[in-house]
Structure formats: structure tokens, C-alpha cells
Length: 170
Figure 1 (cartoon, rainbow, N blue to C red):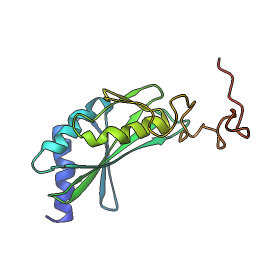
Figure 2 (figure 1 turned 90 degrees about the horizontal axis):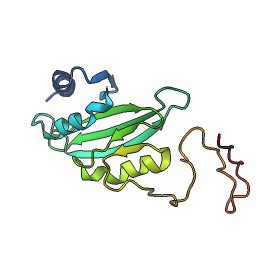
Figure 3 (figure 1 turned 60 degrees about the horizontal axis):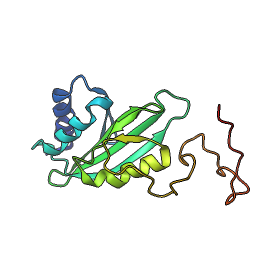
């Protein structure tokens, strides 16, 4: 299969099946990215895994992105790879502050810890996750350190006397 054939399969199959749920498709340096509607995420992920031409059987990574000041603020990026077909695809969803993202742990159990990491670092909540709790930081930790509005030196407390004062809650 040539690179153009792979692109056609990875774009056409998804567009044909999820025409109204794909917001944007980009190709950069031969890598295909689909920005999709959040409501269709689970269905698209299931399709990617079960379709015989796609066979995305490896979830390589899930990462969060904070576009502070933009609306919606967050983006969750999924990297999939097909070991038998040797092709990859990136799926993105956008989520606003306080909006939940559907968990894909029922499709890929390996999504468990990457979703927990995105929750712990960005505060992105994954609806339907079997055990969504902090993975790196203590349970009583305040804030989410990879958010753009989190202070560079953290917040001042008994462990961190050099941090910034916490903002007043309104």
C-alpha cells in the first residue's frame, strides 16, 4: 500500500462513516489528524479499532493541551497505530472548562493511566472512567500544574514557602 493509499483509507473511511462528526482533517508531514465532535469520540474510536481496513490496535498515547484564553480551552489528543497495517492516525477533541470527555477505557484498557494523567495535570474529566483519580500528585493537591494559568512556582503552602499566594475564591 502506497502512502497515498493509506491517506485515502484513513481519511475516506472515517469521512464516509462519520461525515457529520468530523470537524476538520489535516495532513502534516504525512500524518493525518481528525478533529472530531466530542459526542462521537467513542464511536469513532471503536470504528478505528474494529474496521478491517484500519485495525488501529495500538493506543500509543493520550495527551492534554491547554489553550488558555481560547474557547473551548482544552484539547485531548489520541495517537493510534495499526501494527498489522503499519499506519497511524491522530484524533483530537476539544473540551471547554468543566466539560467532560468520554473515556475510551472500555475500548482500550490501556487508556486508563493516560486519561488519569490528563486529569491530574490538566483537570480534564473523563466521563465513564473506572478509576479517575490523581496519579502523580497527592489527593489534597490544589490545582493542575500543566494548565497555563497555574503559577510557575506553584502555590505557597507549608511545603513551598516560595510559591505564589492562592487567589481569593469568589
